[in-house]
Structure formats: structure tokens, C-alpha cells
Image (cartoon, rainbow, N blue to C red):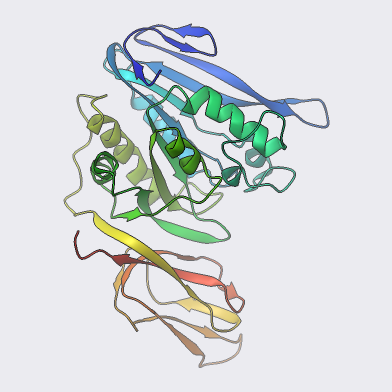
Length: 322
């Protein structure tokens, strides 16, 4: 079932049209014997339409999507909605409670899809999510943030060669849309193989509710749902044009030291432009860091202490055809 025209069945339980219900997916049991469950809210619209999932905290410390999904749910009126929204704000409940990107066995959930019922903890959780949330859906919106003390400019990623995915990406109203191929084992890769259309929203940093990211993600999600015909109204898009990128590159630290950033998220930089300087704790001068390519600053480290080879500034090259 990838479209909804009547009562919606979730794990065999009925959600009537114009109704919202909360569920818990059994994720596993801790060594203490305590059960952990994935919280789910299903909003079944009063009118026919597609089934869409919203997922956050696939990486347990990337929590900004939790807040975006919570506030989007507050704005959804089942009586006015077309189709069904399956919201899973905290998928990796194990990492979430530990404030960790990973599961207890150090596996990355977003490299474990489509998963297996008899595999590792990550594999079992991935398979549960695929079977119960992805399978009945036609579209998905997966929320992420920066990792390893890095912050990201709010942007979306997806297969922009697919006209419908591109249309949805541009409807979001973010500064940049990035075309890229998902890595093997990711939720997006597994869902695409099952014929689903998926957008990934990135913004902010781990363990933080970035104000700008939340303020971008909420209206963007509502515009995404409006573009699918699920809502009659949504916030007006920003006046800026969404820039398209088909290639991104990290500028890496040429040496260890203290990095002093001289740019900002969303800045348009030229090839060779100064991005900052790496110094010793007591040195006046240091090693300048310059852009290897021109484009938009998509992300950067928020930790000034760097080692040789660390990714410190992420640049999205712009597609001239956009």
C-alpha cells in the first residue's frame, strides 16, 4: 500500500480517516531487561492521497530532525490532510538515549539497510523499519545533521535526475539541492531499490537543535507535503533560488593546529579564496587554508582543534545548468 484512500492499517491496527494514533515498534531489549521501542505517529488524512514517512535520528546524535518532525506533526490537521503521514522522529532509539551516532555495538544504522531479521542489532532494526514504515510508503523524507563536530547548511539531497524527486527537492525552499548517489547500506539506497522516492534533509550539528535548521526544515517539510498534494496550504517559499550542486568536496587540514574559520555557511567562495588559517597556540602567523574549488560553503568543522587531513570546510560546486 503506497496510497491511502480510507482507513490505514499499521501493524494490523486500524487508523480511521481523519484520525491520528501513536504506536511503538519493539526495537529490542537492553541488558537490564528494559525494552526500547521506536515511537511512531500515524496521521491518516480525511482525503485520498499518498503515504509518506518522515524519519529522524537514524544517527542517534543527529537530533534536529526530532524537533522538526515534532513541530510538523503539531501543524498537521488530519481533517484537512490528503493521504497518510507515518512519522518516526527517533529511529535509532539506542543511539538517541546514549547521545551516540551508533548503536551499542558501534554499528552505523545507516549502513545496515535493508537489514535482516536474524542479523546484528543494527540489521534487525533496519529490517523492522523497512517492513513497517518504508514498505507501505511511496515517499520518504529522512532528516540528518552534521557529524563529528561539524555543522551543515540546511540543504536537501536526492536523485535530481528523476524529475519528480527534483520537483520535490526544489519545492522545499532550501539554499542548495545536491544530486548524489546514496551509499550502499543507507536507508535511501534501500528504499530506492524498492521503488520509493526519497529526499534527505541535512542541517545543523549533532546534539543540537539548530535554530536556523529548524526554522528551515519545518516550512520546507510542509511545502514538500503540499507539493505531493497532501495539504491545501503551506508557507510561501523564500525569494531565493535553490542552487543545484552535483559535486561536493571537503577541504582538508594541511597540518595540525588551531583552525580559525574565515568564512560562513552559505557563503559563495571562489577557487583559491581564503577560508581560514591554522596556527599554533602561541603563533601570530600560520598556514592559510584556501578553497580548491569554487562553490557554496555547505558545512564546516565547529571544533577549532584539527589534525592533518581532517575535513574542515565542505564546498558544494554549483551546476551551471541550474
